[in-house]
Image 1 (cartoon, rainbow, N blue to C red):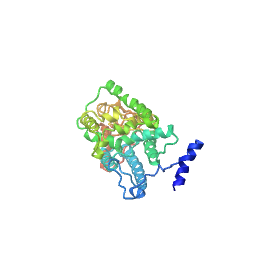
Image 2: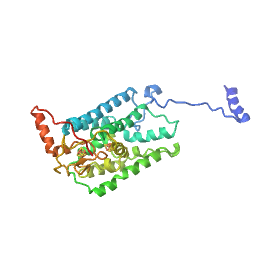
Image 3: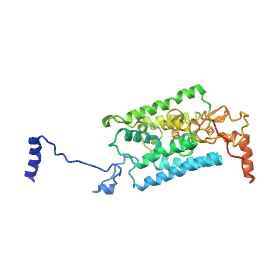
Length: 323
Ligand code: SF4
Ligand code: SF4
């Protein structure tokens, strides 16, 4: 034992070579308490706690089904009540049960690092969460924001007395989310020692989901929710970096939300209907429409459709295209 130890110390000193052993740890598999053994208990500061890998598959399936439901409810059923039910379900699952992680917003950073640093190991579920809402956006618009995102849900549910933000101010503040996106990517791709995931660090609502968090961030989140009583979803519209990506992709979407179920009336009744400033010239704007299904109630054509449906008659024809 002792001669072996001496050799290990002397040989590198003489030859000038390092004999450090390569240490390789599987980083795509989170070790459980049982894997580590010897009665190890994961510290409670780690949130959320590591879980079996198959839970990733459950999360992925829940995400895919929820996105499909959100698109179907808004674009085919055109039903706000059903969307609220889905919103609450996703808030409970992705927010309070999964404690806000994994989420596509934070995944921006993981994907950025994976692109910039070939040694970085990114779990498949994170890739899935990052791309699937963007793929849906390419087809239909911001389906994820409508009924699936827990951050959007918690803001949507506190919106009680919406006021219209002046359009110029709304557009100006909307630029902030693109700046935040650039900053988040820049911080994420810095060298390891300087790297920071600022989206997660400054997430205003995750502290509510986990029932614990830094005091200043909790105050920030509470202030946003307080503001959100009158200003619809301030984080989504002005700060969310994933919202910035979704807005860009939604411009190219195949279909989008339509306020009237079929032909235009252009009566102007829907002009003030959107709490998110997403109606422009009586059309839902794809890049800013958050798929909330509120504007449908303002349309007389929609009322005719609903009455016809309730009476068991045919629905109106296919929804028209939006702007
Ligand atoms: S804008 Fe961001 S926070 Fe808001 S619902 Fe969409 S992804 Fe979620
Ligand atoms: S246009 Fe506005 S009210 Fe209508 S679904 Fe989109 S975000 Fe909601």
